[in-house]
Image (tube, rainbow, N blue to C red; front, side, top):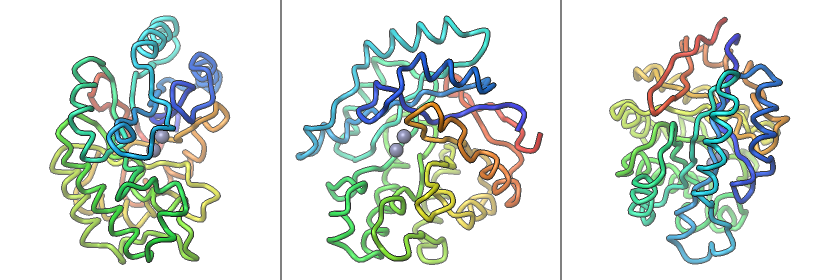
Length: 272
Ligand SMILES: [Zn+2]
Ligand SMILES: [Zn+2]
């Protein structure tokens, strides 16, 4: 890819993000990126459910000031998109509607991290369920997230459930959940949303979050809007494994990935 970009990154405005935002922007410029979406966690899901009081909430006013300052300061060298990653649970819908009234973004990723009241980052979720139960409940939650009443641009890291799962075979294969996955992909397409290819699953025995079979099915159903995000929580992971993602996407028929400015998708050729 000639035009370098990253649509999913975190800074220290996220409870689990390390880099100072300016350091991340400078690292992106150094690397030759022309577009960077900073998509810190906005965890209204954690505010809406019991048991998540330990999660530090994002300071939106301070973040707006800092991202706007950086956007302006580096505008000749990079497009800095003010993004957020929403953690979907249906109980949080009214809170996100409120966030949107007060905080303007370029790009919003809608992601599922909590299923049936448990963060699927932790093994307790898997200990209490068979793989079929665990993955089916996750996909049901993703399906509900597609219908969220607030504005968002992309469905984040479909297949995230596999990253921390504790089963001997972690893969979420299309063939095993085809009805549920079809339902999600069709709804994504019908609503004009994008599907994210998230490259942060390296080392988790899942090559890309959605194994290529899911990506291929999305294409087959007519899906065009795809984004690529590293989910970097540190500068050195910017654009990690993007070449591999691009070649997997080209193989199943995608020619472009998309980046968002003010919620408008712009096509970036994958093959140049
Ligand atoms: Zn996420
Ligand atoms: Zn993320």
